[in-house]
Image (cartoon, rainbow, N blue to C red; front, side, top):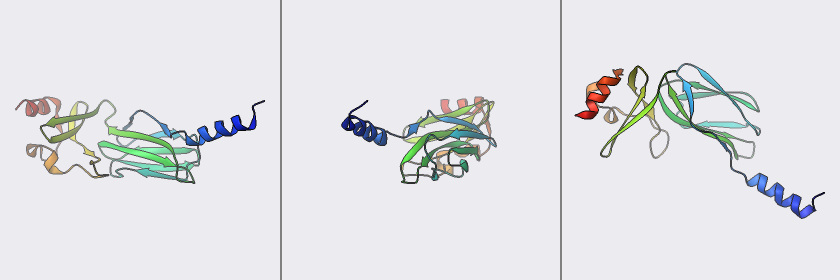
Length: 155
């Protein structure tokens, strides 16, 4: 049997443990992925709700739904406000992923599979959507083939 001090230290370490952090979760657009929360889910925060939405089924089950192409994050909080789950979420077509292109200080995000579409993303200061200034002006916000994106990058 452990001495009382040893149990108290073990319990303190357990309470101080960081939230369960997953690798970036890929959620296909217009589909949902289940998350089994190890602690009690009291509330859920989505960085950019235009990209992903959540449904809390019970205190241990959350579903993330892909709404628009892009990347955001999801944090599940317990009743005391502590994070019990945190993950980046990439919403893309089932066959593809997110491509980020940097040209100097300009950043362009595309959700790509057989074609690429301009993607919404979180900004540095919090949840923001990609503006038309971060997508090449000749896209008109439309879906592009991968060859077209490659051609634009080589210019």
